[in-house]
Image (cartoon, rainbow, N blue to C red; front, top):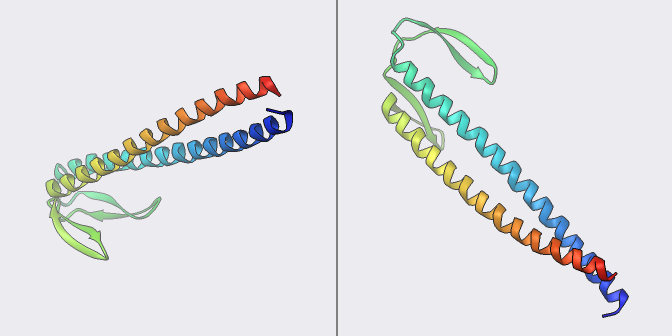
Length: 140
């Protein structure tokens, strides 16, 4: 091959390599977000378990929004109102709600595993491309 062809191929492969790096960064960010969601779900499950052991009439902090709470007296520690989607709220017991959280954790972990597998595949492509780039830069 001639020098112009080699340089063009080098540029094309470098652009592909940059695209792969951006994809890997995006997937890593998604994995971090999922890890945060998993921590949130685990914390919620622990809070639900503690709720079962909290005496009725105990003053608790009820969240209104992120970082905003109000003081409330616990009148029922056995039944929860759970949003199940499409603005539908159903009554569930604490164990039923924890079971629902377990299902969500399982689903989120499956998604995380898929992203890790995708990251590994893209990483392999990136390594192969990096090796090709090294070979091409020797010739240019």
